Amino acid sequence: MSNVLIIGPDFFGYNESISNAFKNNNWNTDVINYFDGRSMSFTQLISSVFKPNYFFDINKLNISIDYDLILVIKGTKISNAKVDELRKYSKSIYLWIMDPIKLLPEINEKLSLFDKVFTFQKSDIKLLSKTNCKTIYLPLFYDDNIFGITRNKKPIDFIFIGNLYEQRAKELNQFCKLVTESDENLNIQIYGGFGLLKILNYIRIKKQFKYLSRFLKFGLISPRKSAELYSNSKVGINIHVRSQTGLNMRFFELLGSGITQILPNCNIELNEINIHKDSYICNELKIKEVVKILNSYVSKESNTYIVNHSSTNRIKEIIDEFNS
Image (tube, rainbow, N blue to C red; front, side, top):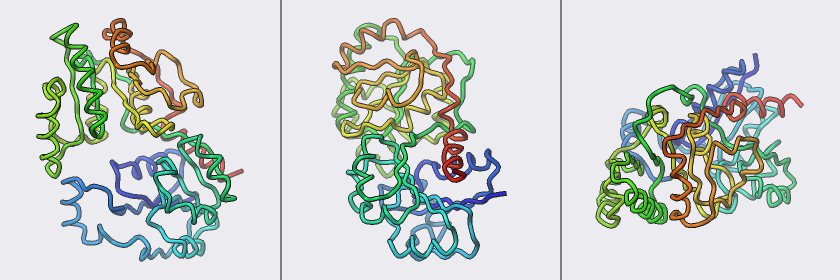
C-alpha cells in the first residue's frame, strides 16, 4: 500500500480532510500540521498549551521513514533547503497552492523545486508555468466524510459562514436590509468567524452594521457544525474575495450539501468545472438585483450532489497524476 506525508498549516482541518481522502483511496497517511503565522483562534491557542511543539519551525522537521509521495499544502513557510532535504525521503514532492499566487510572492523562488504544482485558480497557471514547474489546475473540494445531502426540513432561509471582513459585512448588511424589507420573518443566520480572540471585532461589526447585526452569531464554526447548519438551510450566501477567481472551499461545501448558493461576485471560474446551474445563482449586479432573483428560490431545495468534487475524488486526481 502506498504512503503519503501531508505537510500543511493548521487551518479548519483541511489537512485531515485530505488525509481521509487518501485513506479512502487506500493510501496510508501521516499528517504534520503547523502554525503558519495567520491569525490564531482560541482553539489553536488552547492546542498550543497541550502541544508544546505547536509553534515549531517547519524547517526543523525531522522525518525518519520513506514516503511514496510528500504533499506540501501552501508551502510559504518551508525553505528551499528543507524541500531539498525531503527529497531524501521521497522521489515525488508535490505542492498544492490553495491561495491566489499573487498573495504568496515568497513562494515563486521555490516552485521549480517541486515535481508537480497544483493550483486551485486556473488563471494562475500562465504565471506559474514561467517557473518551469509542471503546473496542474486542481479545484478545491468538499469533504465527503462530513458534507452530504439530507432530507431535513429547512428552517433556515439564508445562511452565511465565513470570515466577515469589512467588504463582506457591507454586502451582507445590504442583503439583510433588502430581504427583510420583503419578508420580516425570514430566518437568516450569519457566522463571521468571531471567536473569543476576535470579540472586539464582533462588537464593532454589531455596532457598525444595523441590519446585519440582527442575524450575526458569535462563535467559531467547525466543518461538522457547518455541515449541520447547511443541512438545515435553503440557500447559502457565498461572497468570494474580489481579487480571487478560483472557487473557494465554501463553494464546494455548499455544493456537496445540496443547497442553492448565491454568488454575488461572478468574477470566478465557474466555467472550468462541470456543475448543474441549478446549484447556484450568479449575478454580477448589486445584491439588490440578486435579491429579486431569489424570490423564486427561497423555498426551493436543490438536490444536486456532485460527487466528482468530493475530497475522495479530488485526491484521486492527484493519485492519477502520481501514477502517470
